[in-house]
Length: 514
Image (cartoon, rainbow, N blue to C red; front, side, top):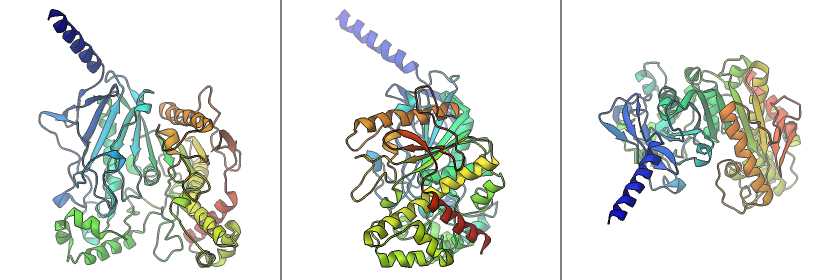
C-alpha cells in the first residue's frame, strides 16, 4: 500500500514539475489567463482580443477586449466566423459564431523572460472562409512562439455602406476584417511577453488571402512597429484599385474602389429587403451568410488602413520597410480555372484592347487544351505571380529591408491534382508546416526538411540562411536570385518574365488611364 502511495506521489510530482516548466498561467492586460499542456508546450486556445462584434458592434471597428474578472480559461477553441463553406474544417467540431475575435498562443517558453521570436499566422480563404484553430508544434520545437488569429469574413467583415460611413468616427466603412487583424497585432505586441515572446521579434505570415493581408499590413501606417518581418505565400495586393469598368476587375486580388464597394453594400441591403442598417443589423448572421452566395466582399481603399494603391505607396517608399519572404507556385491557376475553349480564350484576351495581341503572345493557345492552360497561367500571374514580382522590384528599389523571393514548382502527390501540370495553390504548405496528404518521395522528404528551416531561420533572424542549407540570395531584379524549389533548390532569374512584363504594361496603362 505504501509503495502505491509513494509511486502516485512521485508521478504527481513529475507531472507538476513538467507542468510548471511551461507558462500555463499568466497575466495579460485584461487579467489572469490559464492555458493547457499540449505536446510539451503551453497552449491558449481562445484568447479574446476584442469585444464580440455583435448587435450594435456589427460592422464597427473592433473594440479592444475589456478586463475580465477571475481567471480566464483558454481551453476551448473560439467560434469560427460565419462563412458559406463547411465551418468544421481542419478536423474540428467548432460551431460558427459572430463572437469570433479570438487568437491562440502556443509557446515553448519556460519563463516570461525568454524573449522568443514570434510567428503570427493569418489564415487564407478568400476573405470569405477559413479559421485560426490549430497548432504548429514543429515551429514551437524550434523555440518559436506560435500565434494564429481570427477575423471577420465575407459581408460581416468587409461590407461597406454609406450609412456605416456616417456612423464611423473616422468617416470610413468596410475593412472590418483588416481592422480585426490590426487589433490582434496590437494585442500581440502589448501582451506576447507574458507568454515568453519578444514583441520586437514578431513575423507575420499568411497564404492566399492571408498573404494578401500580409501585403496590406506591410503597407498600412496603422501597423508601424507591430512586426519586423513578413512572409507572403501566394498573395499580394499590388494590382490597381478594382473598378467595375476596369479590365482588371476580375483580377481577384485588387483592393476595391471605395464608392463601388459602398454601392455593393447598398445593393446587398436591398437584396435582403431592408430599408436601412438598423434593419440589416437585425438579420441573423446565418441568413446574411446564406444570402451572400454569389456576392464578393473584399478589402477597400479607405484612406486609413489601406491608404492608396499599394504599387504607388511602394513607389513612394511609404510602407513598413521590413524583411520579406514572398513567392508563388507554378500552377496556382489550376485550382480556380477548370475549363476554357478557344472561343472563350479569344473573348477574354480581346478585353485587353490594344494589348490583346501581346496577351496572346504572352499566353499562346491554338486549341482548347492550350486555351485552358493559357487561361490558368493568366490567373496564376494576375492573382499571384505579378504581384509578388512587382512587390520585390519595388521594395528593393525604395526600401532597405531584405526581400527573398521563391518559386515553388515541385511535382508530387502532395502538390498535384487531377488535370494539373505542376504545384497548385497551397501546394507549398505541406512542405513547410509538417502535414502531407500523399506519398513522400525521397526528394519530397529532402525538400520538406529544408523548406521549414528557411521559414524558421527567417522568423528567428530575419534571414532564411544557415550553414548546411542551399544559399538563398536576396532578390535583385533580372538576376538569378529567385529560389526555385523543384527537385531541390536552385537560384534562377524570375520565372515567366514575358508574362510579368505584359501585366506591368497593362497595369501601368490602367493607373495612368491611358
